[in-house]
Image (cartoon, rainbow, N blue to C red; front, side, top):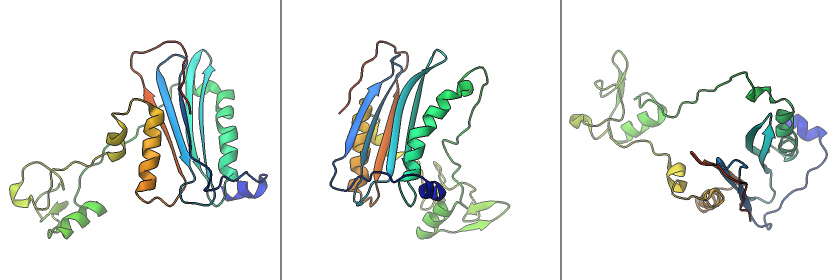
Length: 214
């Protein structure tokens, strides 16, 4: 984004003494709600931008949400905030009769050769070696599992926890959820700007438009 920062007009900076902002709303069809929270955090300037936009495109309700983190300045992130979603909506074929999809891994294999897993095993006094594949103690090809009593000191049964998801899952209001994440990041020592957008999908719901903001 450095080139854009050099060609765009100066962007208004938000300073650390400005209060955090938050808000939220509900889609017109009542199928999803959203919330956002943003703060300069401990920095003297604000390079984060966010956008929450609900629009009608070819008869469909479309929600567009983004957090744009400036790199070496705020102007490029501000430009993206002001232009990205408008351009997408002007070219709506991506939601028309042409199907598109993206596959995202939601879990990862627990393998002994993963850097963090190998470090955990070695710090517990174990070792990882090649025996046809990477194995804990030259025996087991997974690094987390139930059982395996003789290797239990190294092969834990604890899952990798989605801590942020677990933290806000009980919070029904996405605005409050975004605020909670922002506060948690600050309390844990984040030295950067902090911006969160939370979207909650409301299964089998619909209704008239309503919103809550603050």
